[in-house]
Amino acid sequence: MRLSNFFLAALLFFSVLLRLVDLGRIPNGLTVDEADMGYNAYSILKTGKDVYGRSFPMFFQSLDDYKPGFAIYASIPAIRLLGLSEYSIRLFPAIIGALTPLLFFVFLKMLYPKNNYAAFSVFLLTTFAPWNVAISRATFMYIELVFFLLLALITFFLGIKNKNFPIYISACIFAFTLYVYYAALIYIPLIGIILFIFFKKELLAKKKNLIIASVLFLVISAPALSHYLNGSARSRFNAISLFTPDISLPVSIQEIETDNKSNNKLFNFYHNRRIINVSNTLDNYFDYLNMDYLFVNSKNIRYFYINYYGLFYFLEFPFLLIALHKIIKKRESNDLFLLALLLISPIPAAITLGSPFVHRAILLPMVLQILIALGLAKFLKSFQASYFQKPIYYSIAALYLISAVGFIHQYFVHNPKEFSTEKDNGAWFSSVKEAIPQLNLYKQKYPTVVFTWSSTKLVPGIYYLFYSKIDPTLVQNKSAKWTNESPSFRQIYNEVGNVQFRPIDWKADSQLKNTLFIGYPSDFQKDDDIHTISKTYDQDGKEHFWFVTKD
Image (tube, rainbow, N blue to C red; front, side, top):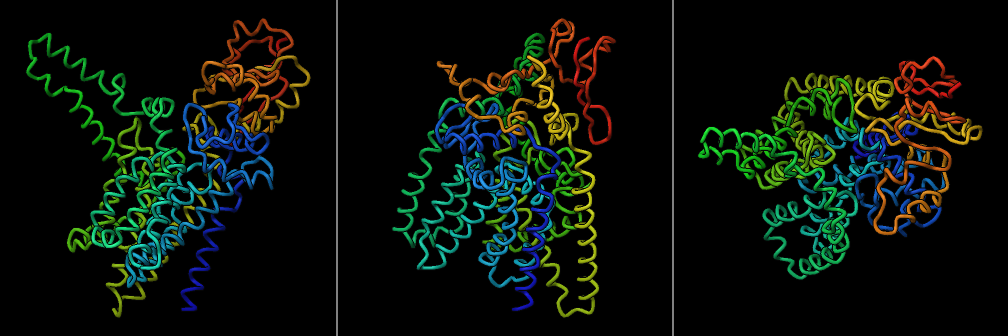
């Protein structure tokens, strides 16, 4: 017992260490969403209102989206204590991420109380899991959803197994996830159906608790459901929906027209929009089960960005196959329950444009990690009391150690250099951060400063607000000028004080006097009359932004 407790304590220490060390520096810079969420938290802290002047909203208008408010409010205590910085806004998700291995451990202990191998394996694997480390070290909403889904499932099993533990606590936590990340809107009904199918007998035995749970769930979730059903929230979904006709149907429409011209109207059936939508959805769905980014290379997966490593180590792939083989062969209830969770995990992402965006299918890595642990446990148990037990155990430990050390080296040494600017997948934008101190130095000397906003991936205004800690009332006062409808982020982040954020049109802008321009070298069309007073550089030492005036 003492040895196992020491093992768990050591893993928890490493879990915290991996997610907190150098947190303000790695990832190198902030995503646009992180900067906007962080500045909204700062605005709430300072004024009690978001950047649009709304008092303590549950859902924040953030860029072209409405984000659940939990992650924003959760970052406020650290901002209050430490000031507005990368570290302060990332501290809460890092702590939550560090604790998730413990919840995985408890969950498997409840689901498989006699399988200690599985519980300890999932704690170990989650501690060093690339997917978990990556999303724990940034201000998103994904690791928080994993945390609360696990907590909701744990309290659910406590409720059906323990007479003195009310099951409605689980219902309250499930309802709360709707304020954590919008994928929960699809996940929660599906998980509820699965739980009822597999644990119908236990639930019906607690009818009174079940009724209370249902009422509490509806009461807690009502504001969230009201928000998700209103026009502003639906407009964002429509923008990313796979079923948007202008995006999903042009090819089939063209094919219908071609068939009509050839008098092949019979084949219009094959181009029916319903069939096309089903085909596109299935295409997306199976894209999320791609073994390449899961186990080999996740460099193109948004917000993960890890060269030469998948979301899981390649060593773990055989153990996933072992677990799936066991499920198919034995078809035990708890195993099938996990398989059902796996099958629904890509659904929220499968009905949206672009793939794979794993953060929209965050249940997928969560369930895969559990299945891999079960597969590893079964493999290790098969060698108990065998002559080859120690060589097999030591070999797996050595291979896993090599994998984990390699990932840590890749993540902390190389990734900060390889994913830093708007040129590489729109990752962390550290190059923008480097420009802000110089902007603040020079802006006092020029009546007008123009900072380029020519990259679709970059919103320079929000970085200026974040790193300069600009008084939020300046943005709120600007937002208040729109009386008929809420302004977009393009309207409130396009100018702050004497700093304008817009594309540079050098043919026209070169005529402006007493103006400082901050742009890419290509913005200035090799004009020999410009005066470059300063430059910033990317991680490779290449020139990034020029600070230019016209002679």
